[in-house]
Image 1 (cartoon, one colour):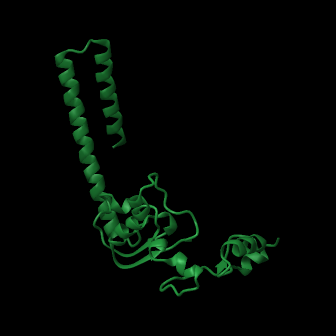
Image 2 (cartoon, rainbow, N blue to C red; image 1 turned 180 degrees about the vertical axis):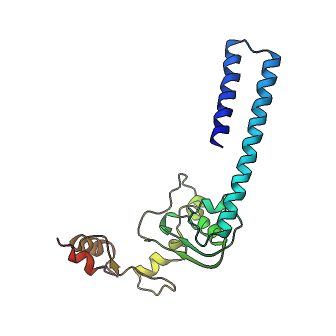
Image 3 (cartoon, one colour; image 1 turned 90 degrees about the vertical axis):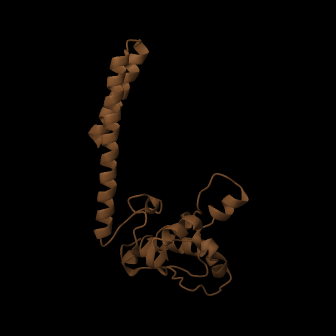
Length: 193
């Protein structure tokens, strides 16, 4: 496919070069147009084969890793998954999470920290706020429920962290997670200060 793309670029360049110089004849233009059309048809055929191959690989795979947007592309479109895990859920618009969840025939898990950055959208209309700037956590009321100590069915909170040194973890925990302080794992504490 890469070689075909290079050939398409070359043919377009030849055609444009002849046009700029004013030396193109009807015969040479028709010949280049035909070669370009043939190469583009060949490239489209290769693209179709690649999509079919990707779909087959994904159908046969035990685990498929993809972004939320990739699930909507032709190579994954309509393929059923037993479990869907949406990571960094605070960054995913609820509407996109719902579309991705629709590809699942079993459980959907939305993972992430609802206090991190929300989905990014450029427009500032009411519909954009409703459909593109709200994460699944906001739409399900997770943030409000946690702030008010209400039970959240299916919510599992991180209680032990394995990344930061204890003093940093304590500062982050007291500033952002006062209702559910993080404990530092023994292995992190053993690394020393």
